[in-house]
Length: 608
Image (cartoon, rainbow, N blue to C red; front, side, top):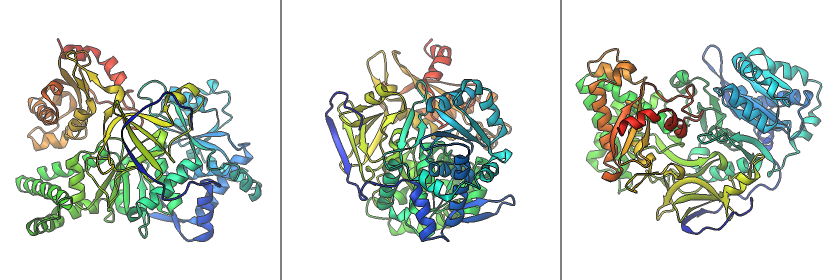
């Protein structure tokens, strides 16, 4: 554990002892080998073929795929401890390359497929990567544009150019014993991966995460949530980027728990892939669930007043049904209404997701109580959780048997969470990282008395469940001395179908204001439903009805705070925040500092 940096005292603490003892030997490769030996016919993955069908990959086949690529790495001179970058969309090959890296004794370093040349250069140079596997020629070209500034980078392999087959061919003469030796070098405490933080403030930092972080957290998660992870024929479809720690943890979880996994590299194929793959649980950020709900609501509105009324009643019934589960159960009348709307609405939503999904894991931002209650009432229980790159993703998560909607749940077994006197969430446990690569002082500063400082604000209730209320560094102090937590308002604003992003401002000002961006994908259907066919962004941001709708969203958000914290003015910007224009991180977090700097004139105008 990093050294102490000062002392602290706690407002409250929530602890969950481990259900599975920490690993003392071995590493993540053992899960793959043991599954192939003990259950060779187990379906480790399913791959989508060119004709749209899903082909099962047995545990034996998966191990063979991994070992053949690992041999290629060894033939290319990859040595235990070497860092190998992986840059591409979520795919079966991404997983194979990742696991093959561990089998070669390497430490894998994910790079977002959308990264700019400058970001790629930073991650590959800071991590000391000696090689990188990239999906596309376009990605390889971005690496080539900074190659002269990466003297340690020896090899770049491109998947779409057939590099995996080249690696397999190069490794054919490598003995199995060489792979066995290389994969056995790392123990539980040794690095498995270096994952870079989102970079919302300053340059991304490389979080060194060990084999034990993933093993111990996955084993304890399996013991804590058997309803989801030990269900017969459990399966999940990964569609968030595998460069993100959340998806990476679920990948490890599937290897540990022997869960069938599939991959969707392109979001436009998601509904088709859900129907074909038929997962039993999924993971997503709240924005995905919000879009599903908004899409269903707007589709109903487009079908006329009767369908719109049916959806509104179905939504209210799902909400009431979910809330009743926490207060003694539904009444006979509510049971009857729920049965009716299950046939008319809920069953169709479940069918869209493959028909077998019963649980979803959500993280990255608050879900919103109405949305969580709606999906629970519709037959999809959303288990909201919380974690960071530094904690191997989940620190806390709601369980099917211990749900408190509005919270991110109790700590996972093997994890302790505390609230410091200033409200900051502190954590320690099996998933907490050991260091930022090459940054001893920043590592030390990140801990206090052995507790990791998350930078988030929160509270713990009487049941030990954690609620996140905002970011410590983002607190706004108005000219009147009022402390305002932007997240409380921003999360509610983003729940509106028209709103894509919201940035609350007001530091040192006399009142709180907000910059708003519109969801371009939602405009056509919203416009058609409101007598404005062909509504585009340029028109919408000045349209009186659109502005009135945004004002209603502002009013709803203001209802949750005091008048001194409420938004008095807002402006709809001419463009959305995206990864491409530099205002979103690859994990879809707003780069608040960049927004405040580049839109300073628009902020000043709000206070003119």
